Amino acid sequence: MMTYANIILPLPLEGYFTYAIPDTMVSRVTAGVRVSV
Image (cartoon, rainbow, N blue to C red; front, side, top):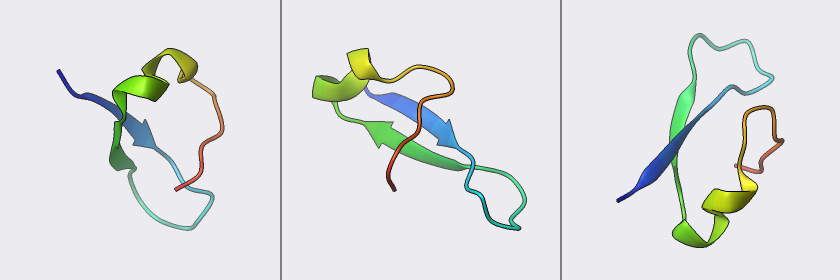
C-alpha cells in the first residue's frame, strides 16, 4: 500500500502538493517534519 504526504511549500502558492513516500522512509515521516522535494 502506498503512503502519501501533503506538502506545503514556502512559496506564494495555493494548496499543497502530494508526494508518495517510499516504504523505506514511512517510519521517519511525521507531521511537521521538514522534507526535500
